[in-house]
Length: 65
Image 1 (cartoon, one colour):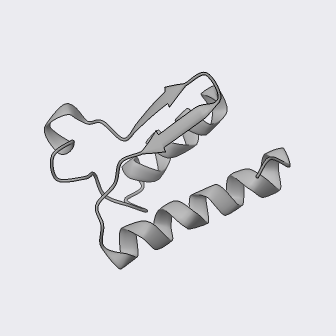
Image 2 (spheres, helix red, strand yellow; image 1 turned 180 degrees about the horizontal axis):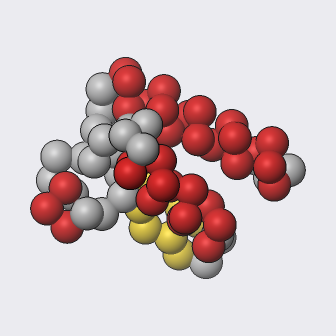
């Protein structure tokens, strides 16, 4: 989970997706609980596609889906 958290933070820095409007002031991108993950992002097509691309890259790298 730490590696995935780092990839999410890096994806936001690289502007692959944008913050959810209510989470931007907190710089909140995701919440993780044990083996669960909630990603908070802007609901526009570009942000969703960017997040999915990041998850695809993580899957190739880690073998996890």
